Length: 142
Image 1 (tube, rainbow, N blue to C red):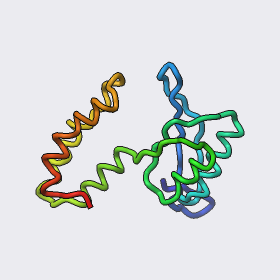
Image 2 (cartoon, rainbow, N blue to C red):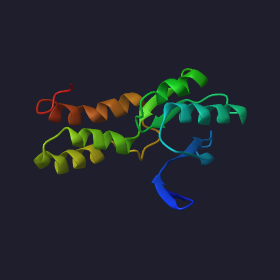
Image 3 (tube, helix red, strand yellow):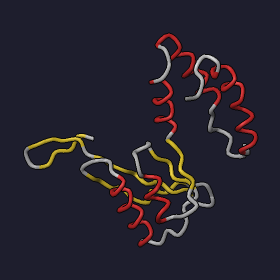
């Protein structure tokens, strides 16, 4: 985000850390600001969360900055690292032809719905298979 400090404006990294409680209510655990996105910044965030009593993290969703997963897993072992859905979509759309972007995006949104918290991992994988089959011939995984 553009941030004004003194007489100048520059882009800086802001992180909002959300936790999901056992009752599935979201809770803001912290808002952090760094001059840029770095793995050391993520390490600082994790250290702060540990100091404040967070003992275990099951899933960490990130935008794909190099080294972030390793920094998180150093402090919270066994944490699963997942790419943010928005960044996943951007990554996919960067690799496809212009004429396919709209339909791929529509298919993606239909396939990867997040509206059923009771859906199992197996059910979700089965739900994604038609999407993968439809597009994997034209755009094989590289």
